Length: 308
Ligand SMILES: O=C(O)[C@H](O)[C@@H](O)[C@H](O)[C@H](O)COP(=O)(O)O
Figure (cartoon, rainbow, N blue to C red):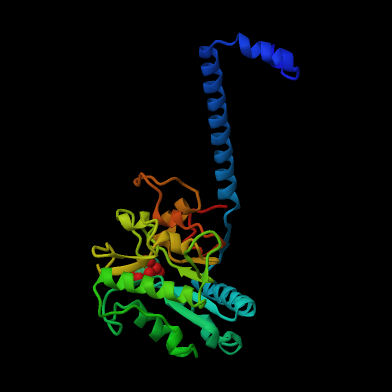
């Protein structure tokens, strides 16, 4: 009832006088609690909003790996034209594994002639710490299967320093990326200081790993480093460097390119068709959530059991 009279100065004065100091304390605590509850509800709402507004997810299902390669080439060529028109260059981050082979349609007409290759900048999402001419090197894989067949200037291909230890190679690569941001060669992501790559091309292992971020390794929880190292990778070779999730998720576009039935279970989990069963935490792939857009390229083997 008292609150009904708050508009009247006299009533307010009388009401206030009537309060003992303990009543004042109770009212202050009540107000504080109300403000805290209000803030909690607000922040939960904005978190939910933030999550749903973050990036768009597009799932493209193709019958065969060949069709994935065709669809991926068109997607990359379109992005190349868009980003070169907007910014004068196109920064592309490559994974190892089967991805490089899936890029093969870019080496054919019309793309081989229409893409402005001289404006591409190439980076490596993860790299095995071996000499660059070693059969395990992702750089060598990309060079032999793709980069040597297109006119991308050598100076635009950013390989790791293969003379360094994994820790030092990761620090060195991170520092080189930071210098490229300072020089304006790479853009900064809107909401953070991380570099904002135009396109990251990711593969995924059957255990749901992406880059060299594996289930049982702390590197997947890294929050501040851009690039980190691992010395006991479950997928050989054991010594690697890898982009971290904050850097991965600062990208404008991420393509998750997954083919073959080995990966089908992890695909189902990542696309929320089933819950993680044996793992009591999200798979690394579930942490892929770019500020921009995420597009899945899947063949029918990788989607066996995925119904949506
Ligand atoms: O260097 C690596 O091993 C990778 O970058 C790794 O993350 C790879 O992309 C996945 O393991 C998928 O590999 P596949 O495409 O061969 O299945």
